[in-house]
Amino acid sequence: MSRDPVGPVDPGAAALRALTRQAEGLWQAVHPTWPDFSVEVLPSIDSTNTELMRRARAGDRSPTLLVALEQSAGRGRRGKQWHSRPGGSLTFSLGLPYRPADWSGLSLAVGVSLAESLHPEVRLKWPNDLWWRGRKLGGILIEVASLGERRHAVIGVGLNVELPELPAWSPVPVDEAAAVALPPVPPAALRELAPGRDAGQWLAAVIPALVRDLRAFERAGFAAFAARFAARDALAGLELRLSDGQEGQAAGVGPDGALRLRTAAGLVDITSAEVSVRPR
Image 1 (cartoon, rainbow, N blue to C red):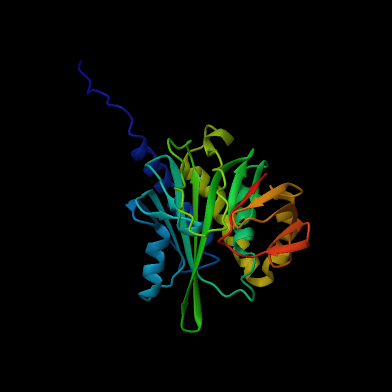
Image 2: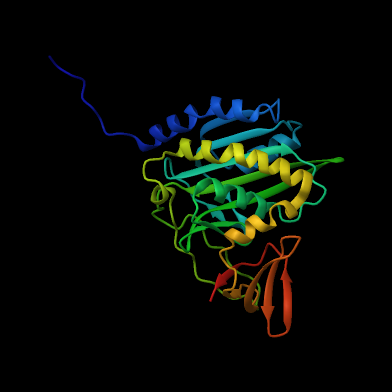
């Protein structure tokens, strides 16, 4: 009796199936909060953030979770590109009409929610990175479209499922004459946190809590997350060097989510999202 030959397992196809399996359960979990919520899983796209921003500006402002196995032009903070290969990353964006009284600290609140859902040892590096044991596990990019009197938020997340062959984030040329070149942070991967979990299971682990926390932020702002952030703050008490040339000791964050830097000249609040930070 002959059998069909068994070919090599396609990690991309397996990862796509793992993500698709979670779509119905995620819709059921989030639907009571946002009745018109939808979940889409795509094999490939330029950028999940870019696509949801395009839709919002074209008039589609419904709450949507868009997950992509692969992004050809994923974006990060300060113009960086996120390189994702099929099965190697978990990349998704959540787009929704959003009306918090104060937007300050939103990326920190999102980071808190993700970190708590991922692993007890995941920490947050201001303003939008997730770290595990001093290495970068992933990042967050939040964009807002102003549409008349309404605003539409797109919250993008990129997490390494496997250790990338190349740095997940591409470097950005620095134009400022006074800027300091900071060393890259080595990557970490979800596979190191829990080897048996696939990308779909990680997605299911973070989305329901993220939706609840976004609602909490809409009601109460960063004040509802300040203590939770402090418990996960990867920089607290460390000597830091900033890409704008400043140096000092990290002293937590302010009520608006600004990084507090204790310098020779006194306490300074760092609010610019264009500044990168590294421990010295």
